[in-house]
Structures are given as C-alpha cells and as structure tokens.
Image (cartoon, rainbow, N blue to C red):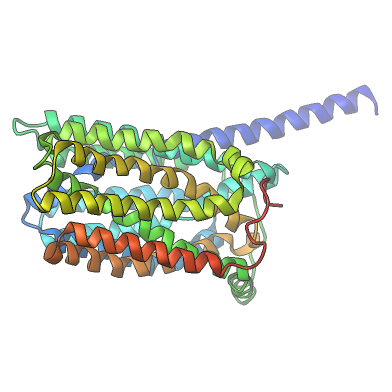
Length: 432
C-alpha cells in the first residue's frame, strides 16, 4: 500500500473514531439529565399537602404505570419507524409538561393527569437511549463495548438523578420559611427536563437502516417475542421490576412514619441528601457490572438481585412491626433506612444486565418495539400491585404489607429462575 493510501486510511479511521466519540459524549451528557427529578423525594409530601392519603397516592402512581403500559408499544413502534433521536427529544418535553401539570393543577384530578403524562414521557424514553447506543456501536463494529458503555450511561443517569435530589432538598428547605417549598423542586425538575431535550436535539440521528413494510416489521416483532429467552426474561423482569419499584415509591411514606422515632427524617434537606446518596452510591455499581459479571457470572447476579430486594423488605417489615408494637427506636429506624442502601445494589446493576440480555437476542429491525413490549408486561402488573400495596398500607399497616411483599417476591423469583431455559445464563464474558 502506498504512503498516500495509508494516510487516507488513517484519516478515515480517525474521522470514524471522532464521530463515535462525539456521539458517545453527547449520549453520556444526555444520561446525566435524563431523569433530573429534583422533586421526586417530596412528591408524596407534596400530594399530602393537598389532601391525599396513602391509598390515593397508590392510585395516582398506578395511573402513571397504566399510562406507560398503554403507550409502551406505540412509542416503541414510533421509535423503530422514525428513529430514537426524535423520541429522546420528545420524552423530556413530555416529562416537563407532566411535572408542570402537577404544579399548576393541585387537585386529585390534576395529579392524575400529570402522572399520566409522566408515564407517557417515561414510555417514550424506555427504549431509545439503549437503541441509539447499540446501533451507534454496531455502526463502528464495536458491539462488544455495549455492556461497558451501557453501564457507564446508567452510572451517569444515577449520578445526575442523585445530584438533582440534593438540589431538590436544598430548594425545598431554603425555598420558604417552613422548609417545605416542594413546588420549587418541581420547577427545578422541569428545567432539567428542558436541558435534556436540548442535548438530545444535538445528537446525530441513529445510523440508517432499511424501513421494513409494516407486515414484515410485525413478523420480526413476533419472531423476537417468540424466542424462549425473551419470554423467560419477561417473567423475570415482572418480578424484579415489582421488587424494585415498590420500595422506591414507599421511601417517602416510610420516612414519614420513621420520623416518629427519628425526627431527622422529617427534614427536607436530609431527605434530599439521603436520596442523593442513594443514587450516588448506586452509580459505581453500574459501572462495575462488567467486572461483576466476569467475577460471579450472570446466573449468580440474576439470582442475587431479587433475593436481596426481598430480604430487605422483610427487614423493613420487622422494623415497622417493632415500632407499631411500642418497641421502636432511633437505631432500628436507621436500620430500616439502611435497607434503602441495600436496595441500591440491584438497582444500580439491573439495567445494564437486562439491556445486554435483550440487545443480543433480538434483531435490529424491531429492537425498540420488543424492549417496549417487555416493559409493557411489567408496567401493567405493577400498576395493579401498586394499588393493592398502598391500599394494604392504608388499611392494614406498613409492616404487614412489607412482609408479604418480601415473601411473595422471594417465592415468585425462585419459581421463575427454576423455569429458565437450560444454560441460558451460563458464561462470565460478554454475550456473543
């Protein structure tokens, strides 16, 4: 090869690498502001300020998941047909609109409408970030980097959300004389959503791919959903998702009850710091997923994540039972809060593992749609579970509800894991 040809090849390779680096840099920045939820640690308290009880809180959150259920597949189809970049712009705008409704229409009906828009916004964002990352890497023959890059993106999402929680606590505490300016935290959230939309607009569109006729597109979706590993993952994901989401939505009610034993838990600044530390603690775990897979293998991690969550719920149930029986203490209250940190271990790990599992087992033509279909089942099941769980807390107490959630979750995941296809989770290196 002549020297001029070698220089031309080097220039072409550098251009390709710089194109990849620019896109990855924008995706990493977008990850920081994907979920800038400064108000989330205080939404239950914000709703309570306007007359809602735990049962109504559960109903409002159920509407959020029902909206996700109804919009998961349609938004996935739109992403597959028109590309994920459009969805990465649209999703944050819908989230900003949803949070804005919570702020403007402070009634039960207004909260229902706001949560419905939030569910739609989350559905829009559920698949496209992973899709545009995977397709960008595939364009540069770098698919083997997916687990590493997705772990890094998830770490950035956790860090960004964690810092936004800290911002929310600061704004709520110093925003008025009573230290409960939760509305200002919602405003900060909307600003973060708008920043995400601007970053997404700057992304290069996903690498081109052929637009299949609708019938052929539907055939690819049905083929991928018919794969035994994908069907098994749906059952696993439903159980894991419920075990992850219930404690998350229950953090605020738990802190409010535990404040009887430990008054610090009623301080918005401390709550913001606590939520921030939870996410900041989970972030390194996300980036460690490739090393954890190499050390322990996927089977151990897929077993461990849900069982750790179930055990933590049982510990929280024991603490609440002791408090209800008159034997609570500040030390036990802190033990219950320590379970929040235990739950961050699977929370920080699960997304990269599940995304890698799916991305390597379905075709590119319908990848976003299939991932949305998997989420659809989990959202629908949890919407019903959420209503039941918070109804139970309102009428039977938190201790009993936490206990049954932990026991049923452990039994369910054991059944699911025993029924997985033989050899499905073998191996400790990247999925080929």
